[in-house]
Image (cartoon, rainbow, N blue to C red; front, side):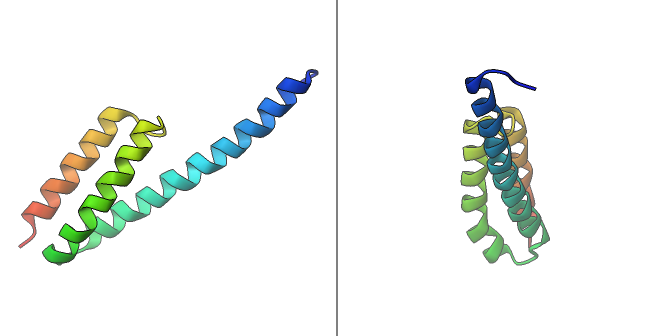
Length: 84
C-alpha cells in the first residue's frame, strides 16, 4: 500500500479518471452500435456528424488511439454511404 499522501491521492484520482474514460468510451460504443443498426439513410446521415465528433474527442483525450478513431470514422462513413 502507498505510504505517501501524494500516492494515495494519485490512486483516488486514477480511479476517478478510469471511470470517466470508461463511461465516455461506452457511450460512444453505444452510439456506434445505434448508427450501424440504422437502416434509414436520412437518419444515419443525421447521426453521423455527432458520432464522428465524439470519436474525435476520445482520440484527442487518448481514450482511443488516433488510428482506431480514423478507422472507425472511415468504416461508419462507408456504411452510411452504402445505405439505399
